[in-house]
Length: 478
Image 1 (tube, rainbow, N blue to C red):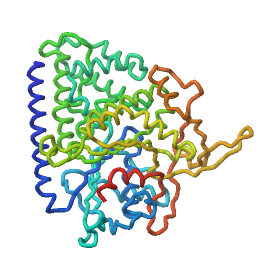
Image 2: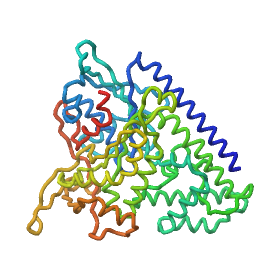
Image 3: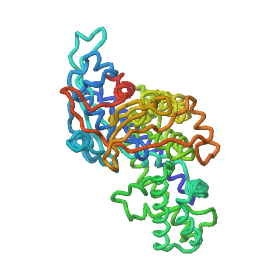
Image 4: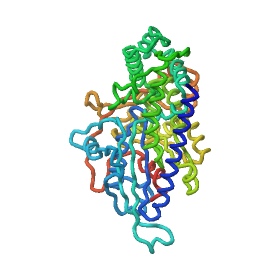
């Protein structure tokens, strides 16, 4: 059985490779005669702010008064930007207008989180630069932004694992996690070698899904399969009704055998189509990370986040997109940006430390991407600034704080989250060693609501370093 499934997986890989190559060849044949398109993927793990990032990025490209670090804007080469119908008719449109209204309306609030793939096309009319700029007219670049849940991205690593490997990794990981106690009890009561019974399978699957939800709330990032968290129209289907099994025999017709079959079906029917239809067509990628949330959750969450970043990179196909490489290997992800969000939760004095932390957390992932030929970067940003800075006297000194409106109470409050270390190793080392808590008491975190805005004509929403992120991701194509 393992041999047959391996052959099937190999055939699927070959078919996907042929398809990607054909798509790349087709795009190369038509792009010289049409308007170029750049596909930007935006993802992030739980609470990272994907929807806010896309909404603010598009709003600030439409009204560019706050984008001085984007060279094409600074030099006056972006003549116009406008939204157009997206090219993929079967993908939901990103609800930009509704999300922008939520952030900038009279009662501002955070928009709903990403729950499925969505897309938006922003077209930019550009004045050429260079030696022959005066001899040619304006050009058009279509920026297709693809929004997808980070939980689905982590699923791509499952394509290289069989059921036994995945089960062993999951069961090892949850041995000491209290969030998994109910699932572990249900698994202990089941007999994997007994005949499959659907009620038992459903009970185990539901207990495992409950664990994944609890683990995500506790700050863990290794919550796969991702569709267990965001099932959509697959809720209750057999492809989402499985759970990891302990090592042992898997006779025909047994619970263990059926769970393994459904795991393979999940890869074939859910994960692989997502890779083929959406992920494998991306040119540039930004991965948003709530690093401050991980710090607040403690050392184990930080280590879990570091491993997740490495797993995320394994899902990409990084490299340069030369003509020959596209024909032979299919499209590659040319640039990857890892961005620590919610920089507005810190006074600007601590932004360099936050940037150093995200650089250290993603070091392994970025090294692997660069080795494969992709360009990578890491920075800290806030897609929408929800706080103001202030210095507050404390014990004869001044604490660098931020002030904002608390989401839960609607009242204004000042936050000093704690001092981030100059050396990220002071955090990553105890995290790698399995420390239970930070020696100095840890870091505080609050959820701030967006503040009412009064925008001048030509200005997008206020942000921190969103223009630098845009320069890295798309500046070379403007």
